[in-house]
Length: 109
Image (cartoon, rainbow, N blue to C red; front, side, top):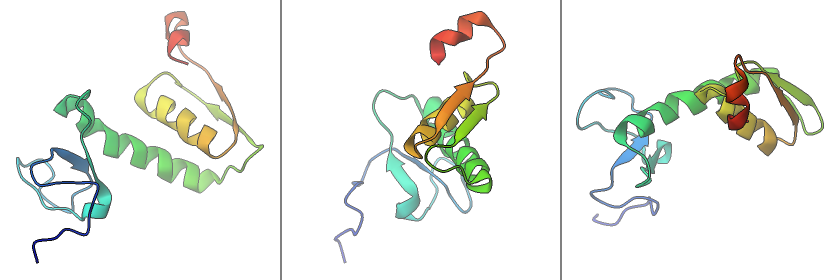
């Protein structure tokens, strides 16, 4: 039919997500549950980094299994994966500690 079961997307939306194949193509097919509309504040280049960054964080923390009240130490906490891991860890209710290589990166934490 013409109705979509995915209400978070509409025809013509630029999307990001995980694609089984063709992810570097101009047009690719993906399971709609694994996609999200690209926010207008993001460039395509910025949006393209999000699925890999968040998948890396999810798999890393899934393996570590931190629980609320635990402490998580993040190395290189001001990079893309470090910042995402900090957010994810906060969602889990953990206490996050991060280190950075340069003093000017403290701003990002």
